Length: 532
Image 1 (tube, helix red, strand yellow):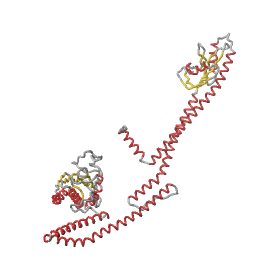
Image 2 (image 1 turned 30 degrees about the horizontal axis):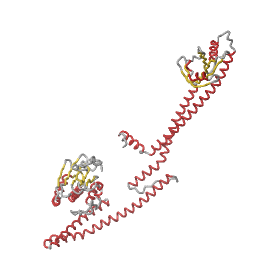
Image 3 (image 1 turned 135 degrees about the vertical axis):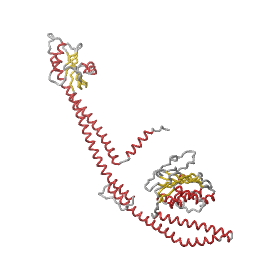
Image 4 (image 1 turned 90 degrees about the vertical axis):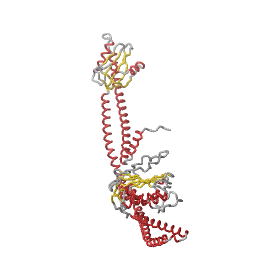
């Protein structure tokens, strides 16, 4: 396995990715500027390289022409020298001084076996050793190279050196070097570099501005589409984009408008269908009230007289009575669900002590728990007051307790109530059949069962948890579930302490404190205080 990158590297990668994906105009500008910088750098380098090569070649050619002319003049003067009146060494020094002192752009240096004759205060090491070696190896020609000329006062500057030979009447050869300073050419190149740099900076500023304007023009319809889509998502289905021209952006606006129109049409159809369904459920529920009341009265009479019936008939009457009660409860739940679906559910806010309410419900369910063989235990903390609708919160706790008793498998059921600065949380923990982790959301679906073959032992309607989550949502609270097959389940109700509080965490963990898995599952150890 490969070595994992360090954390700081992964953090930097995440930051870069987040920065890169934060804005489309930013990406357009960065890519445009990167490509422009690359083109400008490469183009500037090629231009400077060609300019330098051209200047150097021109300087070399001019220097060779002028040096050759000067070398011929010096050779003519040397040939006409009367060596009887002066020595050869003196004449070479005179020639170097005379030619080098003339109003020209070069200096002269002549070497003999014992002396070096220079003009204009040059140092003898201004001539490269490679050029000296070339003249020694190949006499009779004129050779040119680049060097850095050094003066006796310590100054230096780039130069072109042209080398050749002077020949005495005896046939002896003396190397002669003509040094042409290249300061002017160097200044020209520096000026070109400055001009290129300033031009490049101006171009980059212009390109950045152009890239911003282009990106803004391109992304403006996208931003408009995003704003229109947001308003449509918030419920304003009449929003449309303005279509201009016939380009790709106009096609985008047209497609967006067509989609919005189709969505509006479909939502209208669904609203009509939902309205019909809600009205049907409401009408049926209300219409069933009268026959249900009659049936209830008849079954109560039969139930009260069941001891006078035969055992078979008495059992039938008991079953009829139980199912009639379940039917009445289901009818009430259906009416409540229809109110949620219609958006007609409202809260009657009051100060509620969630711990006291839980204790009252535990007492109310004690008989059922005893019949099922489960012990109910309450663990209460401090600061458990909330602003809530007592009836709805009581129904949530009642449904959670009934569900725990139904699936508790005759084991203890623990209810905990704890509050913190922003919220009050209640958990109901059973040690019964449980459910799979991926079913934590499905338990709140209407009429859902983890095991279809399992009967509802205590006569539930299958709507209790769905209604409880709706009640929690009305309070801007959370109702969540945790479960493991064979290890029970825990439901957590979290309510904001006040109506103005926005929940960001819970006072109790969703995972039970008494559950110790063999291998800790991802995310399970840190779910306390985390938004679902």
